[in-house]
Amino acid sequence: MNPGEKITADRPCCITGSHDCEIVATKAREGHALRNVICRESGLIYVDPLPIEDLETFYKEDYRKSYKNVVVPKKKHILRAGRVALSRFEQAQGVIESGRRCLDIGAGGGEWVYLLNRLGCDAVGIEPNKGYGGFARETYDVEVFSGMYQESNFEKETFDVLSLFQVLEHLADPVVDIRSMSEYLKPGGKFIIEVPDILFPGMHFDHKWHDGHLYGFDVKTLEAVAARAGLKTVSLKITPGNLYGIFEKPGAGETVEVPSLEGNFESALEQLDQGRKSYWTMPRTYGKTFRKLSKAINEKSTVASLNSGREILDSIYGPKAG
Image: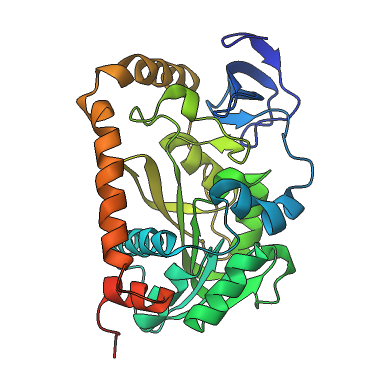
């Protein structure tokens, strides 16, 4: 099978239920076989069939090691995650305020949970990976449940804010998972979701496809997935390489209409093709090696005199609230 070929996918589109798809890629970025398809009814891009049979075990035990070759974050990883957490807070548009109860699903090393607690929130997390979850608890003295979100004992409808950063693309059925996660939210609560932008032209086309990234979202398909799960869109914007959405859980009796995806299949394919063609014409492409080297030097010098994860994050986050 080849890119552009029309097929009946093994898995249905989680937005429309359709199996009517077209192949967009046949290899993972590492070079092995991995089929990604695009639904002709919605424009949603996803891996078909699933490349990993036991996703729960993979994310609990293997994902962090296979992705970063570590079982707990290194100092450079903490620095990066802390800087990203601060950026995410700045994009949250006032959703994060002192006194709010917050739940971060896919908490990683706990950098976001630690930041929110410093800002006066009552923040907790859920992290499938035992090493990262344990690191968060021991290093930052934060509450992070180790396991899948379905296994946690947090009380439903008690949180003001949920966050899901770079996680949704890893889940086998994002509509089902968002709907289930939303049960933790109070009516009117906010759900922050960040995912990679599959149409981002600044990434080499062949590098977009990865065993762990089961879905590739654009603005329209992310909004449609959230709506199918019962969430209203508050804001949704494109940041370089990512999509950052703030959604709201409606009150009892409120309904959410799924936005039209007419023409999105054609639009998404066109943008993918344009990105593939324009990648090597973009000046930014040729500065990647220099930027990576400069970033590595900056990270090494920044953490050289800092001995712990807490010291690294405190140097980024500044004075504690209150």
